[in-house]
Image (cartoon, rainbow, N blue to C red; front, side, top):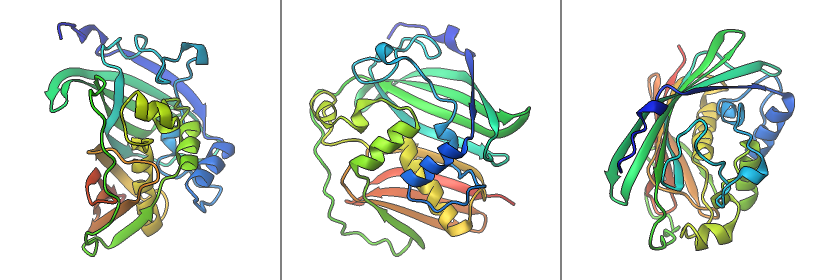
Length: 278
């Protein structure tokens, strides 16, 4: 790849939103939470300050076209690979928040599946000048695969007894559709099975990376209470599929927590760590 993306580094955009009670109710309803109305749960920030391209602008895969904030990269497949989040202060209902995003780096790499481009973006969410959340997000772009991916085995035959925190979830089409709606995410791999299988050669609908991360955050909240985390980092390792079992596990060690999302065959789909607020 001969393109030089250095001129895009440092590019920024600012978006505003309101932490409306309606958003919080829909977030809780989507995840089957029983959250008090005065609480904005960790993970709801991924439902705020969203790109809002007109429908007529969307590409075949449902994504807005590149070339405004993120450069016009040559690869069509996009994956939210990782994030490192610092929760400086909790969001609250009716807050008017601003998110400033800056492109930190663009790096070309060669992986097992071919050429990749990693884009790192720094996000700062604030209210009235007070920083609430800092996040460094890593997005990877790659070309379409040339062969289909088989559906993994979903027959659990592994031991989870080493994980004191455990929860089993089976993401269904309603959950994926609702989370897509919450995050204004029109990527068709999350709701259009024919497109996901026939065009992107997945074996089924894909569970959103930030949805999996949010489920891990809610595992922490169920054990510790809401808004108890000072930081949270995750890295996606393998896709998860609609209709297959997902095991959320955690292991606290003093003020630090090791977390994983495991597929029904025991593969690690996401690794995460968290630190409890002092």
